[in-house]
Image 1 (cartoon, rainbow, N blue to C red):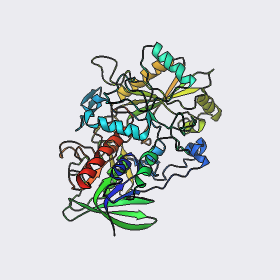
Image 2: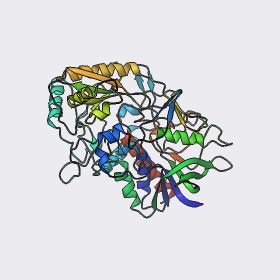
Image 3: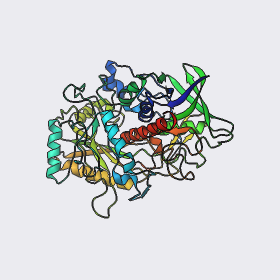
Image 4: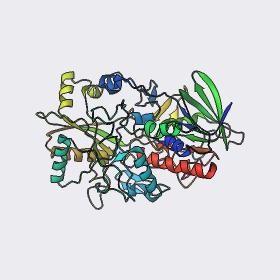
Length: 501
């Protein structure tokens, strides 16, 4: 049986951040990734391949109670960041405290924004995030501005920004991780959001974390390695090994420390599947919160259409609106954020608008500016990941805070019509859209109500950490990637300094 100092399960934002902090240390570290490196090929930028054929999606079947579905999951080195839209927001300072919403309460975190502020800065630098500090009206305090300037607007987005300002709003440059500008790789193509970048211009976890980490001799990456379960010793307190399927062969690998970073849904599922006589409800689960409090934001796609204007923008993700993030004024409850989606093409609309003739979908896509309206999804114990008898994942999403979301969508429609687009349509995202998943292995200060301590170590186990968006107690209303990286860097430094210095 092979043995290491640290085994990291997953190569996305969380696992990659921990690995990079351990790179060059005394810790012999193994990263296990169930997928392989994503091939660089023409289909990377082909909407028909990516959306029509679902070329890169997992073939897994998950369940939403009685309904089977194919989740929007991607198993590759770098995880789902290979397909993300490169939006890298800090959580707002208020997001770390208790926030009262229209339909419930967003709980406080066991750490404050100040605990993560310097790590946010390091994460932004690592990922090459381009932005402008202070332009966002809800921007939290920062010790230094972005190192890189924002990506400039193309003409259509510039005109929309001007109209937004004329209407009294404060749009700001959306912080994004793209290698744009003099000497950069970005060609400002139309294939960024929801596509893999075949020229490595998008700052994803493989490029920014895994590749630099494995350049060090103490970091090893094994792909095609799906962890089946974690194994505890006779006391149930220490994890001693993982069972992992590698190229069709079941192996056991031991380590002194285990870092689980498989994503909020899969990490919870693996902990539940690893139940034993001492941990009958699953590992790290004496609190019975593992798998519960699943969140993934309340989100709607919005198409703002002008029948006589072609939208020739290639990279629209250059501005965002947070004027109503915490509500419409004193005493009101939060609404959410508004940011552009990537450049929509007909194959992207095919599933949502299946009854519409293809030429109509193409016409809509060519004349629309497309947006992403996002509101906070509140944690609920009945919103949970469970394991079916056949070992498949069951996802029960108990929707919360939808009144606020629908109010926000209505407000967004009003905002976008006022920019000169007379027809605005919205489509609510449903269960099979699992981007921004979080909350299933929450951290906290109390082992009775949380699975992890503030440094993401399992209360129930001496050597198990869970570092992905599963640790979130709340979802806020901005994209989670940067917060996962910041906490991953923080946890990684803790492990390096306390165990391997």
